Each structure stands twice: as structure tokens, then as C-alpha cells.
Amino acid sequence: MTPRPAQRSEIIMTELVLPNDTNQLGNLLGGRLLHWIDVSAALSAQKHSGFVCVTASVDEVSFLEPIKLGHVVYIRAIVTRAFRTSMEVEVMVEREDPLHDSRAHTAVAYLTFVCIDQYGKPIPAPPVLPETPEQHRRYLEAEQRRDARLQARRSKQDAHCS
Image: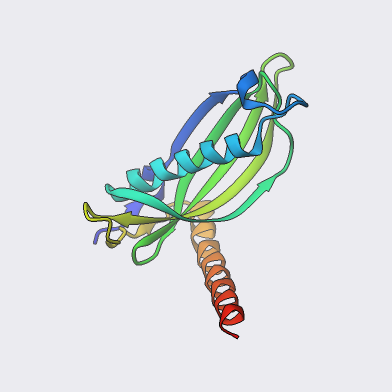
């Protein structure tokens, strides 16, 4: 299978935080942001692979700063690496306060998606071709995160079996 440039998978979503998206403090609900993160990552995985992709895991989400009512949210998703049937997608979130002309990095997440065929069975994912030093760094780090994720899964299985 021919490797595809990482940049090909980039998705940028823009959302406006409305009252229905917030808690009683006027902050964006974490669940709403997770939904937007999952949607953007799924689109990125699909764009990279050319197939329907399903969420296999949300490996890590770090909320760095609150997002308030009226802020504009920019969500950037890109496939960092493909393995056999799975792909890691990195999602970076920024918020913009249009009234104060300020912008801040507010969250980062790593998700794993699996390509599936029309019967719901996993199929091979095209390899990622990193083209920049930053993409190459992310490509290498993705394998480290995958190794840690698989080790954690084995540890949980061992704990349940004993």
C-alpha cells in the first residue's frame, strides 16, 4: 500500500461556544469538546485512509485551559501514524476570544481509529509519510504511545485474569 502524506489527513473544524454548550460557570462542557474532538479525528482518519473509520480508543486528553461562552474553538486533527489496521490521530484545540482578540492552546488529545470494510471488519490502513521534521517527530512518538497503550492493556487483562 502506498504511503500517504500526513498533511493529506489534516482537518480543521471551527465551532462557536453557545449557551447550550456550557455548564453553569459559562465554560464549555468537557463532553461537548470530546464530541467535537472525536468527530474531527474520525474525519481525519477517513480522509487519510479513504475508508470508514471507527474510534478504537481515546488514549489521552489533556484540558489545559477553560473555553468560555462566546469563544471560537479551532480543532485541528491529523493522522500521526498508521499501524496495521489502526491509526493514531492527534487533535489540538485552540480557543479564540473574539472580544479581546486573544488565542490560546486549550487541549490536546490522542485517539486511535480502525479502518473497517462494509461488513464492519478491520482492513489495512495506508502508511503515513511524514514530510517535515515535526511530522517525523510525531510519527516516532506515536509508536511510543502505542507501545505504552498496548502494555497498559496487557496489564489490565492480567489483573482481570488473576
